[in-house]
Length: 255
Length: 89
Image (cartoon, rainbow over all chains, first blue to last red; front, side, top):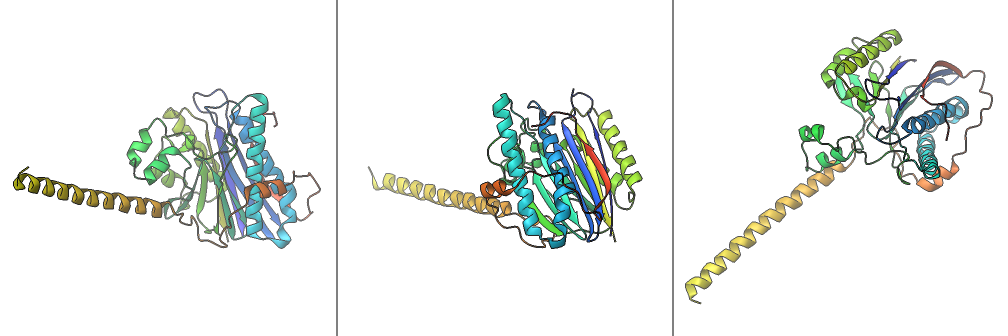
């Protein structure tokens, strides 16, 4: 089993600060392969979003490097799921507390994949997305947004949701309220499929067709190709005057 | 009131009741559909199902990470971290 991964990020055309944070780590070990791929989108409407997203990425980066190696001999996905969810809740509390102490409101999304050999786990809070590209493009996460909830309830059409002024309002994220509910899922890695994690700035002004055509596993199988295509798409998004920060990470496993 | 007028009122009341029954049945059917749709579909094939995680207890159990020595056979092969501040919480 071989893991291939890449990432890119850009401040975009308008913002003064890039409030996104990204972590891509892969490791080989006696027990096989492990990987952590995550994107956190600090909230632009709130101050110090880059601090919130960085805190989450640093915490998980440290966990992957210094705690996870000691879990590998007795790997248990349920335990790992609890630890990841618990870490997100603890980080949420820390960010909320920091906000109260400094009289700020800061927040971030957090979406990621943790892989171990042929299995994987997704963890997700917010509207950063995980796509699976394999024959077609499938979304593996559900946006925690006000408009997504309204579409599900039948109060809005998907077309109305795209234009609604509340389309960026989140119903679940880290750092804003005392309560956060991460979505955790478990499954098998589809070897040969490409997985893409991207902030909303990456996907606002490109179509899913464009994402698939440029990043499909038929076209992109190496780290170099991933880096090149991600940068190409980011440049396209900037030309289309996307105002937000733009971040994306890719991952694939090969048997 | 004449019998004719009373009949008209009765028919109107009956029609009103029928319309209400139909309307509330449709609303209830739509709400059931929405509730079913809200039930989560597994995003990937499930390996083990995730239990409900007791939030406060779980968060309290997570210690801060200590930068201890990694096992020699744990080798980082890709290490990309993008953050845009030196500040910490």
